Length: 255
Ligand code: G3P
Image (cartoon, rainbow, N blue to C red; front, side, top):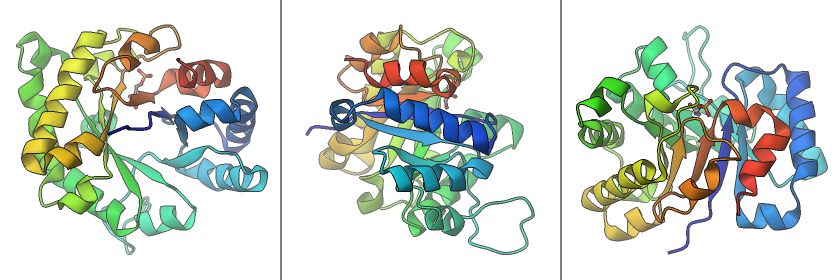
């Protein structure tokens, strides 16, 4: 099965809505139709930028997808500060990141909450980009595969095959995020293969063969190619390098 690679830029808490417009415009000018046919490119701005990004992409018909970095597990109600899947769907979002390690660490998000957020995303026809990955001490103890697969099991708990078939899983080892220390292509492949194998066990070989598995953690134009050459790696979730238009465009044109 051919899986179309996905290069997704997680802007994290960066860029005002005006800066967001400038970045998306620059990105669109740096990528041609051919690039965007080979690779799907998505931006994941902060909530405050999404409306502006939507307006620009719609008006200029840019072939760039967009989404959010988080959502509430609830649909509406007295949840001060939260944003629902319904609101994101109304803004035309395709993707939503769920379970990023920064949410797990700074907002105490558990696997149970991640599983509820995944269900909320599907309820509103958003595609979750589920993040999993181990901290440094777990890798040092050589428990990284078991740790990451346990997060995967927890996040997918109760999710049916029809929905799991369209999920995107991002393997982001915590020690590689924002550190400049990228995982080796072999590390990325080892985990992507383990995730795919687990998906086959939980669902079916067919579901596993169709799911896109991304690598995230200090991805740059200079290191993306050998990672993308791994058979089970289908794209990248890019943080810091995605808020520099030229650099992100080079990542998307890694061929
Ligand atoms: O979600 C992307 C991410 O956590 C990786 O960040 O800055 O290391 O590319 P960065």
